[in-house]
Length: 133
Image 1 (tube, rainbow, N blue to C red):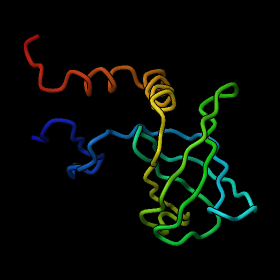
Image 2: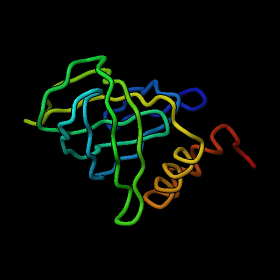
Image 3: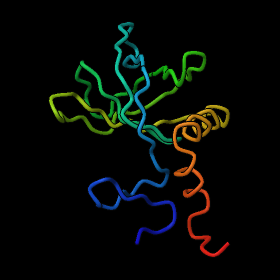
Image 4: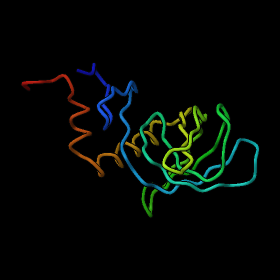
C-alpha cells in the first residue's frame, strides 16, 4: 500500500511523487529560458509541483523554461520549470517538468482546476490515511 501522499499509476506501479498529478489536456505555450521562440503543446498531467507536457520540439534535460498553461478559456497561469526528462512515447514527445518559484496563488489555481476535473480523487488525496473518519 502506498504511503502518505503517494499515488499508484494506471499500471499498478507506485508513483513516488509527493504531489499527485491529475490527467488533463490543457493548452500550454512555453519557451526555453533566453529564447524568444514560443512553442505550443498540451499538458498530459499536472500537479502543484510539475507537469508532463506533450510537445513537438525537443528540449534538453535540465533546460529552464517559462510556460503559460491555459487551465480554462478564462484562466491561465505562468510557471517556471526545469525539464527533468524527455522521451518519445506513442509517437509523441513527452517532457517531464518540475516547477520552481511557484506562488501560493498559482498552486491554489492548480488545485481548484484539479478539483473541478476530479473532485473524488482530490478529496481522497486530502484525507488519505483518515480511515474511519
